[in-house]
Length: 170
Image 1 (cartoon, rainbow, N blue to C red):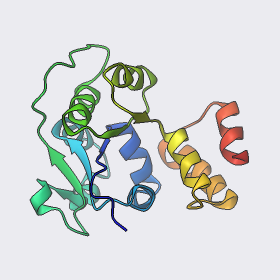
Image 2 (tube, rainbow, N blue to C red):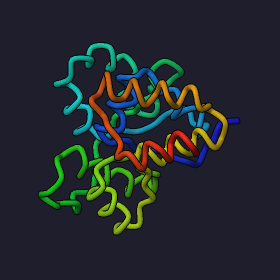
Image 3 (cartoon, rainbow, N blue to C red):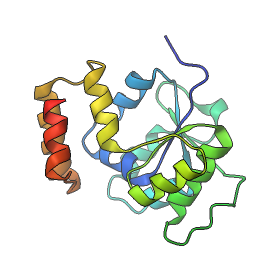
Image 4 (tube, one colour):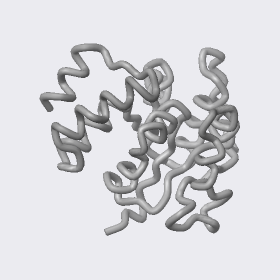
């Protein structure tokens, strides 16, 4: 069953981490959506990555162009009210786009997550998303261990030890 009303916006780091470990499908499976959204600034940031040529094949330039293969929709943001200089363009535009679309924001930077929440935007970090996937039965303990190992190896992503322990126990 597809969720027609829920919209998901991703920031660069969150998206990059899941892409590098080949787990982007978790987004579609967990949220039951046909597409997710990124602002153009995130696409621009990702264009500097080693995996961009592979990643860009998933990107549609608008909702009307999205399909099963191109399910990451890149959009311009109309809002420019997020001007906090602590954040890069990707984070600022991700917050702005989530606000415009009344979407859930998937973002890992804790300061940016807090800024989003102060703007009445619901936001998940990667650890919260992985816990939710495990609780929903999309990830078992063995898979979680592999995901954590892959994040370390392929993305140099390390959770704090207490969060890693929670992910393994959850």
